[in-house]
Image (cartoon, rainbow, N blue to C red; front, side):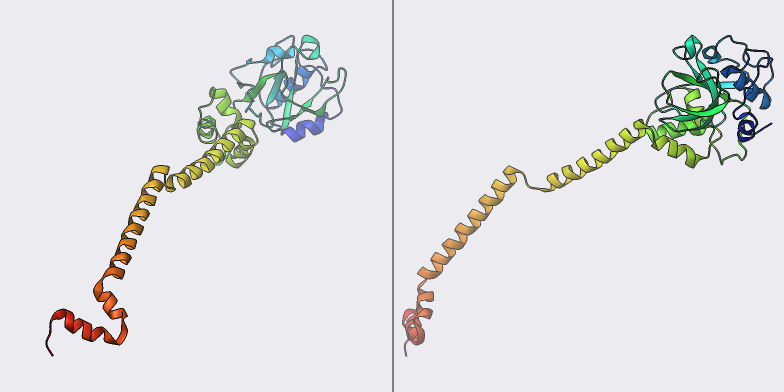
Length: 264
């Protein structure tokens, strides 16, 4: 089984011939790639046009439909619809990809060209074929379909559209899958919503700690009542004869004795 880099090195700038199918076409290249990965059949994809590869060979591939969050893995075979390639579609082998673009090793785009790596967007992409025999090299260290489902629930707060979508990270390390997910517009929108909610919750908490208008009025009334009581007490103090007596200085003792009726 050859690696993707070995395959690219072997065919870079050359025309990949047919193996029982159409010669020097985009499908020819992916036929060779599939056979080099141990997939039998001559040809591997018995179709007259590239777009008809979508969903074919379920015995050897998992079909992953293109979605806004979907990102193929290196080695996956990507398939375009019949709006490109003169009605025949297009196909190639994914070299690298993110949520916005993918680098694909392909041939015959532009028409008549040999094999080389070209960058594409996801416009008119139907989806990609993922090799089923790409088993985990070290269990627990890479993603599988169940891990992909959990990633959807954790990262996007919703279930995956289907098993194919959950399988899009199969064979990748969890950290790589997380990075791809964080590059998607859906994750970024969800993240913004969470952050906006946190800011709003903090504002609500701060506002909840402040008194309402009714509470402010009640506090004001209490202050006024207390102020009135203080004023009344001050008035009573001023009018109290004992207080006047004390304020009159050194004669206060004699006046106090007189008031009490004490005889000398």
